[in-house]
Length: 277
Image (cartoon, rainbow, N blue to C red; front, top):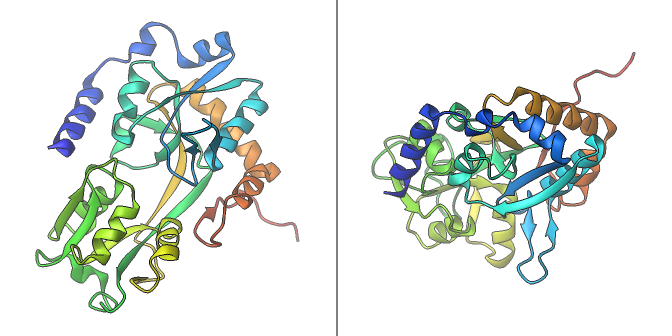
């Protein structure tokens, strides 16, 4: 039911007028106020808010603060927003950008636009330690007898629908911790889970020997980036230019170095030039 609601909301937004456009562009509002109001979703390594101290950490948190410095603008971390609801917050003008938690997905691009990616995250398939049914061919999962555990309405649900539509979904609520995907798999409730290796390795440190990565080839690679409202070209391009500057200066690589506790779990953005002869 929740996934139906989210899809309905997305289709509604695709037909709705841009509220911000009636009051002037997001770019004009940001330049007048000197502030970018950021929405965010707590998920490490993008961003994590300590519930006790209120302090933030994470790659996209540091990245956006550097964007603010480069543009001489203040970054205000305005509101924590569930991933399925941030298009509404952008459309209603509650935030100027979804600054942490935005994976660049084609279905969402019908409603929102994306800034140049700061980095990329590969997603791999995982099975129980003694289960080798999918080693030779993961496409065998596309069968009703096999269960794929997903977060309802999220990226994993989209992957199942596109790549393994005949598989049987085991749907967990969207706000469930991603670690629950692996817990359900380990408990025998599903045959495969698909997620990033950083989350898997965190799970594995406390649950040794239960699960394994099926393939070294990722099922998907998603850009991690900032989402803005469609049609706000001046604002998006300003963030694009700042991101490019931070990529070329090595600033984003240094930020990733501080959070990349599992080498290879995060893919760096390639520089758009070659070395001189």
